Image 1 (cartoon, helix red, strand yellow):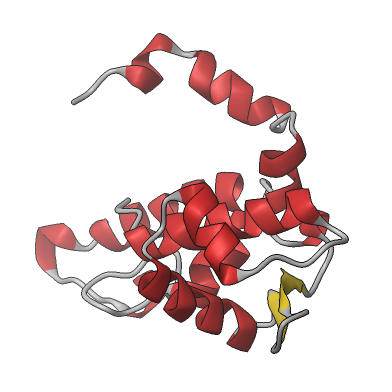
Image 2: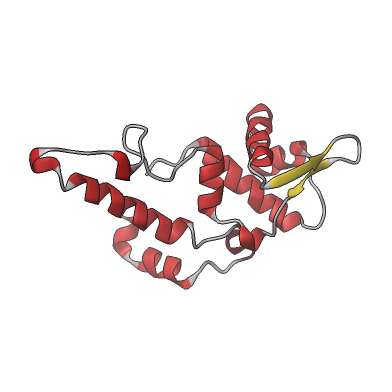
Length: 151
């Protein structure tokens, strides 16, 4: 899985907003705190606002805040909001691709990849990242030395 800068920035922004709750945060603060280019952050915040994950208020007392409780926002929600489906094959959903001949089983491989991604991304929330600890199954996965080995 390729995690884009847009997804990384969106998750980090939401984690900062979760840590600041109930206060609101200015975009400049979020950009500085997480070393995110300000213009890029503005575009990400617009996506998050359209997706119903953040709200905002303009003006000198304005800023951004979470539109939902951090425990109700999964990492998968963030990815879907800023990038679309968790797994796609040439821009199509895995269940919509068809293969012939010896490659027929490949569709099941892509579905399996999506199930694996969902198992982690739908079960880790912004609150888990902001406040810790991460769910035990994530710690189990990362405790395996092979998880840290480059391949």
